[in-house]
Amino acid sequence: MQIFNKTFTKQLFAEFFGTFALVFVGCGAIIVNATTGAITHLGVAIAFGLVIMTMISVTGHVSMAHFNPAVTLAFALTKHFPWQKLFPYWLSQLLGASLAAGLLKIIFGSIANLGATIPANTTVQSFWIEILLTAILMFVILAVATDPKADGHLAAIMIGATVAMNALWAGPISGASMNPARSFGPALVSGAWHDHWIYWLAPLIGASLGALAYSLIHSEK
Image (cartoon, rainbow, N blue to C red; front, side, top):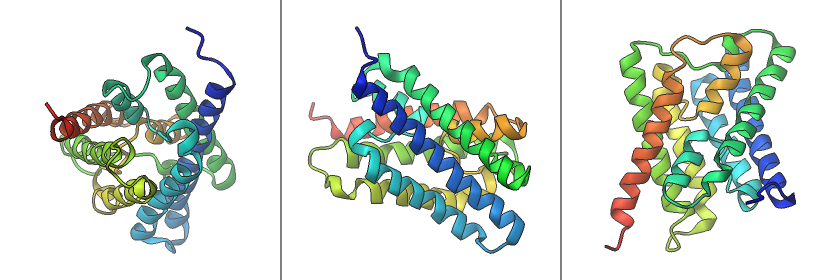
């Protein structure tokens, strides 16, 4: 089956650009706060939430606005997304995140590991936090983006608010990544690979669990 047509190319670019914006704005806020202290942790959490909300609003109709390999996997598992598009989406997301991190390094230098996510305490603690954060996020995404009974106009707001909410309390502990691409870009450019496996395995597990949880309450059988 031929999938690389004009429409799919637009979808890949939307995923690339949305993930680029996520890392450039969110991790940029981390870097600026580390330099000036002007943004504060609250501001960083809000920045992540706002950029997600904005990018979903402007690209959701094009690519479904995943910007996250874990979200793409969960959509495929729940049959809301074709499996043959999974890896091209992942590649676009990883490239967007990596380019954003590269530009941040050019602009600011290697400050705050370019916003790389590193556990503040134990790896076990961050692993479980990332699983649960991503499960909550995926539950919300499926509820507002796929359920015909939900108000689709609120999808961007609710998903952005969930990202900000999770980042607000868990950011100082695990980094509140919930997104392998968001963690990969800064790690690749800064070389901060410490316990990086957490930020792949935990979100993939968490998104799958969140999708399962939502399917249990949404199923009519």
